[in-house]
Image 1 (cartoon, rainbow over the protein chains, first blue to last red):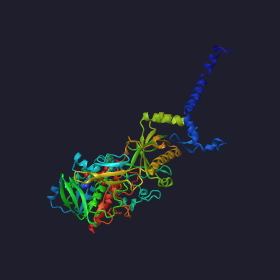
Image 2: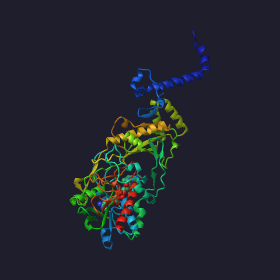
Image 3: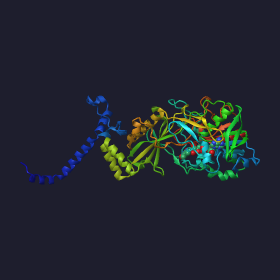
Image 4: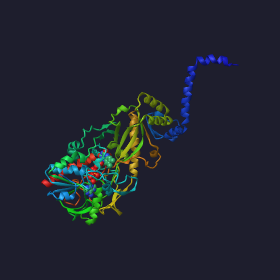
Length: 76
Length: 479
Ligand SMILES: Cc1cc2nc3c(=O)[nH]c(=O)nc-3n(C[C@H](O)[C@H](O)[C@H](O)COP(=O)(O)OP(=O)(O)OC[C@H]3O[C@@H](n4cnc5c(N)ncnc54)[C@H](O)[C@@H]3O)c2cc1C
């Protein structure tokens, strides 16, 4: 059974990874908050493309989401 | 010579060849041109040298339709007219503004930009303008245009001395032309009201109505009624096709590099569509004014972008940390489609102190204009994306189909149309020389002759047209 004492040195050694992970998780979280936005981004795609393998979407195509005029690649 | 009353003017023996009504930019410019050509001209000005509430009261009226400024607020009734508080923003109508647009009925002028171009050097002197730089196309759709913020010449201040010393020009203040009388061929006289009383009538060989973009229609409508059609024999279009430049905040922009566009002294830059873009989208002309957003405003725009495109927002935050200038408010001013239903009528119930019916202005923005505003912002946003110059966010009220906000500028105080220029007498009031159709001696100056409004402020074009009319009349009289 692992005890707390064994973990501490490991954590200290890899603290930078944790910070990185935390940043990733947070950034994932920020995106998750804007669910409405993701829905709108999906709506901006042609509906059928959800059901068949989409042709590689043009990253430079202009999309309008939440009033923003964006490049599709801005949404990734 | 400047006289403070009609009585004082009558005491001198001055025979005028031309009678100009109104001393705003149009009237003053025409009178100066004629005076310089040695033609004796009298300028009858309803107001005095200074602002007064009593004089402004003659300008009261009502607006029916969309919200608009009070009619006694949106113009000034004293020597120099509305140049006494104009902002001095200058630009000449583009050549494309004079062209008919297949998708917008009743557009197109009987003259082109080339007809006023010879007068632009004079206009630059009058309005104290540096040269305009040519437009810069930033895409096939959008031009970066220049609007010069001039020192806002007050015509009464600038020219009072010259007019006072002139032997050929007599400016008569406190003299209101309440109506013109005509026999269907000629104007035979102007009925006057001075210092609160009827002051008889005045005659001259030629009359030029320059009483402003609302009042020109009012004076001619009332005169025509009193003369049984003897002043504007073809009056179907009289008072109609009235236009403004509606102005609303339509959204925001985040710019990759604000210094990409050289802004003016107030950190603003201006953009308009190309003719090709207008044609493709079937929209009217518009002007987008980029106004730098103060720092607190930027944060909320980036926060909004973070909900939609987080990485883009992150990149923008970085830009912001590097350079505090990165966002702008987008104010849009647009050209109204000329509509016969937007018109000046005479009130049936209300008259001014001299007994002249007040104005009832019928004014509504159209669906085509709403589309112009929305598609214009999309066009601008698309250009910024394609050129990697930034990103645009269109205001919610526009994308949601909401009502126009009521707490904004509304429009430009630009009163255009009502006595428009044209060849079809059922759709216009004056010909290509600004002469009233069917009349030998009656001309109109000012933006009431505009057939379409373009997107830019009108006074530079008004002044150019006034130089042209002064020149033309000088030749007619001299011949
Ligand atoms: C707040 C404001 C800001 C503006 N800013 C700009 C700008 O930045 N750029 C731009 O291009 N334009 C601007 N304008 C518009 C500009 O002021 C007008 O286009 C210009 O003044 C019109 O000139 P005008 O000579 O045709 O008419 P006016 O300036 O209206 O002059 C008409 C004159 O006729 C007189 N008059 C009226 N009726 C009679 C009568 N029956 N008998 C005798 N005299 C009469 C009046 O007293 C007045 O002196 C602005 C206007 C306002 C109100």
